[in-house]
Image 1: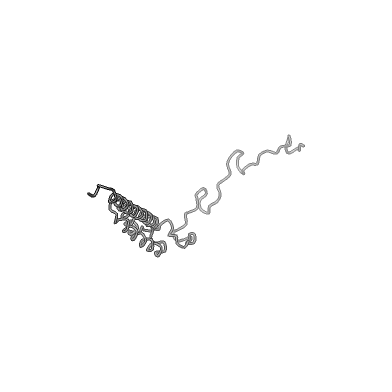
Image 2 (image 1 turned 120 degrees about the vertical axis):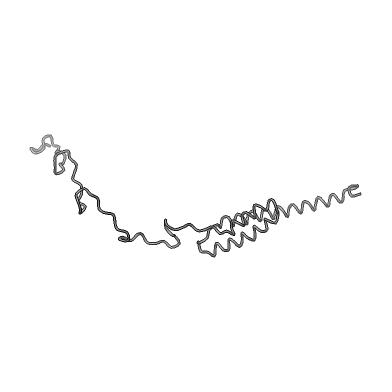
Length: 148
């Protein structure tokens, strides 16, 4: 299908208002042509609404409860001195209680839980050790000729 305006039936590419092959003019920004719009002034436009419990990019992360750190250290030291397991348990339970009561202002619940787990494992190992020691002492006492 050929028309007299378009030989070969194909219309020419659209022109951009200027010379053929030149790019379109930049949009009008309200100021000088070609200059971008000015940035908004501080306080000019409100940001997104605040999310409850989230302090945003400028807020500090929750501070770790020092008792949780102490509980974890005490529980680990329990492997060298058995009383550390018990101290770690007591501090761990107290720290976890404080962290939950803080409403998200304090962190460290993982450290407190780790201290509690290590503490119970250590107490279990200590009880097992005492039982094995008692059984060993019982059989040594029953062995003929050992105690004279």
